[in-house]
Length: 593
Image 1 (cartoon, rainbow, N blue to C red):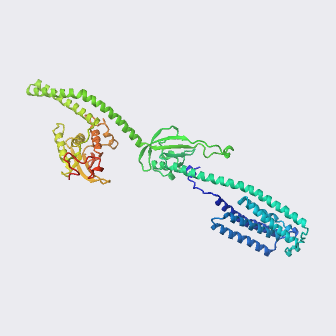
Image 2 (cartoon, rainbow, N blue to C red):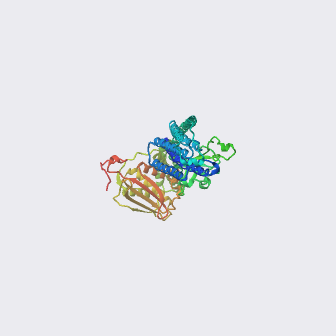
């Protein structure tokens, strides 16, 4: 059985009124069928050899028309009747006793073979309207049958009875005996039908209550099944998907109707069905081709008690069913990586503090001493002093490099609080370029083009963004082709979707670019593709940008190299809604334009 079909069965509202209406409809239909068969039998038995009194054809037609028209009219009335169904049922039972009396009277009175027809309204009344319906029908049938016997006793009967050698009963004791036996039989049938009717009514009420409870439970299960955040898939014995909830459709991108009937290995081959473990993971390809990381578990559905058909050896359709629960754990794994990253940062902080304490002062002393030696050796132009001068310069250079490495450790592990203010983007970049060009390792053939408005200001910590631009330019120049180094810096101001302004800064180069699978990894600490790199430059850049509530991303420049794009928000005029301080030490508020 399809679990989704099972739990999504529409709610059926059954109450006593609905059941009574259905029973009355069946009674009207059975009345037409019953009297049609009876009158047909009377015609068949009208042959002379049977010597049975039958109703003449005109009376036959009138009686059958009366039954049909009454039944059809009652059916229309029942369709529009919204209340008083029990009264309607009593009236129909009395009509049936009248039809039965007419049939008995015109087919021989006390000698009629159709006297048992009275049991139809009596039993119907006892079943449809227990306690009173059967007793009222029995009383009406008894009185009407007594009336028929009284008419026969006083020789009031149809003339065509003489054709059948009809001999009326004139003995009062026989008439009374007939009346007593029939009446007792009628009331006994009424009592029995009432008992069965009461039991039937209790059963129907209990069944209605059970169905309503079942429907409510089914609706509850369906809501839980569809609204739970965990994807649920049920499999048949042949690993065919038999049901899937809305969470599964959201995770996989495939609709539930599409999944049902498909073999799971055809859609999700990465899911291993032979491992029934609580924590498994796999890469799942969604309907749009995107790959996500999911965690899933596989278990067997609990077996229900065997029905009689299974006990007889027939196949159980629910046997060997399995259940798969799955969740998108891409964000969870991302959080785990961030947690590990924070733990790593804490370790770096402790390590960098020790390095700064143990090495910074000695390195400063070594560098200062080497600089003094280099100055003394440079005064003497002898060959030996020139060699010593070069060695002293090496000591100074490497000491300074170690000091810079320690400074990077400290910047990354112990970031400073941003002291934001308005400053000129162009002025800051020119200072950075001036320092970079003073470095002997900076190539003289490098061309840096700045394409933005000279009046463009940004809201940030100028000292920290000096470091950001310095790291980005040093990283770009390291991968540019020697002798043809080109760096383009563009900036513009635009409005975000939320209405807040931001400055977008692009720094592009003409190097080989960054492969797509490394574009996120390059911002991780200690990851570097440079032989002389510490792996902290871009990590410091992203950390600083994030502290300014901005973002940085890497892509491909028009020339095929790397392009770093910084999105830096600007403060809104309403300082109460901005995450940055809206005023600097000059008391200025708003965008400096």
